[in-house]
Length: 383
Image (cartoon, rainbow, N blue to C red; front, side, top):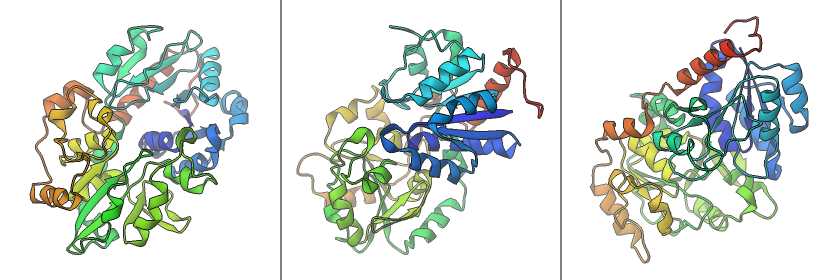
């Protein structure tokens, strides 16, 4: 099978990584095509290479990627209305009868529901949650029910992949933890920098920061702007935190960036190895819950706590952070509690449909089914 994957920013590469690697392990030809939205292309190309995809098309090569490569199945994510490569790819493959799968952007929230366009006749929509799959079938320009698929969250594949007996030990060795407690912080582009002033304040703590993937764009750009060219309020303090002893890590593409060393530790491995998890992203909190780890939503933005009606009982956000909170006593309180929790698997299955780490397999089977039903001839290497 020949598969073409489109990415419009580096987080999209990461979302398709596990599926791409599984397909290549099975002997299928997987290639990438990047957008250049907000100048992100160099990061996307590097991310694809880190995944193991060698053949990467530039945005202006979309005709070659489709007309010459002749993919059997196309995957791609689109989010910003300014992104054009993914939309052109979907429309061009639809004209040729090549089936495509678009992940609905928001993993755990109700925002960003994609509208169905008439020119996307061969495009299918994947939703991470059952609720979003139902919402996408309603309202203005709804998707046909037979084109909406709820296969669970693609990130759960990697959650289960890192949950091996040796994973925590390996992460602790890489971090040189010793007897210290690991405080994992997942800052976002908003002003969630209250943790920075406490780096190095307690010799028994090791604060490990795993910034949003757009941190790489932010730290490398002249004006320190990240996703959608928003300024990152955390950036001015990152060097201070690093100088005080905080460790910075990324899912892939490690190295030295603007004087900050980035270790390669996947966020799921860090969640598993942490004693306390603080996140500005609700997605990380849900990942932690699936791994059986207690997490706390970082920041003072009340809208973050309204991501989903069932959020409050699932994740402990009970006034953990608010104005004038004493960080030291709050962290010590969290450390005094068990970091693990017992998950409500029925709730998770009702929410996602599947929580088993087999998203890639369901996607693969959908691709095979669509190719068999498609007028496009399958590749000679078999399906």
